[in-house]
Image 1: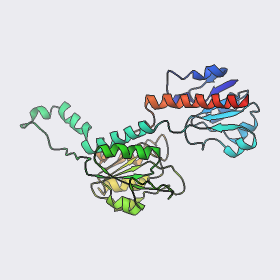
Image 2: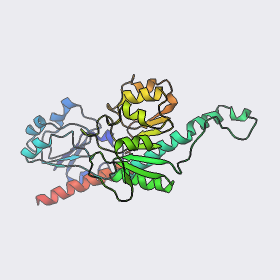
Image 3: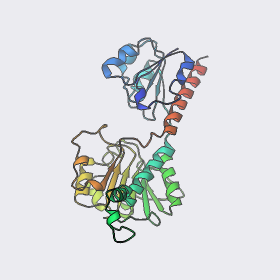
Image 4: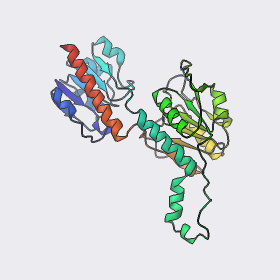
Length: 313
């Protein structure tokens, strides 16, 4: 078998990156531009891609292609209809980053509530050394205990976030964008009730017609003045322009964003031009990407290929 991984840079330099050599002649590229895809897939049986698009045209001109492995959960970068028509199998990977995303979610929540960076800078600047008392109360912080955490999207990751929040003695409520999720342990609210009552809102939903711009200016105005908003789900669920407006108007205490409508964000994005930059925490779509998560991702891609090859014999 000829196997090609089109964008290894998206998973990093991991110890198991060459695990696919077991199946045959393995070729990898750090990145692949759209005009390079066709040439690189010529004569290849198995394709691994994270974000590189595999359109119908490429499939039709790659007669050896038998399997497309998406090194992610979402398969929107592959023309699934064309793959089905051309008898090309498509396999994705699920439930590899739950612990990673949940952990990063809480790092963001705690950063907004505890403000460790501001306190660290205060000490390192020498200001603390000049203080006439033993403590500093200029950057107040708040406890999680007793706070209402509203989760939008109670899938595997949302449930993990809820479990961790319970250890902090939070009250858990949730909103199901599909309307299908009914969890007996936690109270299910409509979106308006969740927005108005939650102290912390954490987004873990997929991006679809039901969730696009779900949280806009009108919804942000419903939130408590001291509430915080976290998005480690998908960019586009929170209207970014509206969020900037809400933060500049001090409608909410703060927000943390790991995902964006366009990734990477534009250099002049409104998020980096806020009147109150300390009110937003930005990370570059890394919540999913712990070393353990990325290693598990490749192992699951390996298992997908192995299972496919066994089915062929």
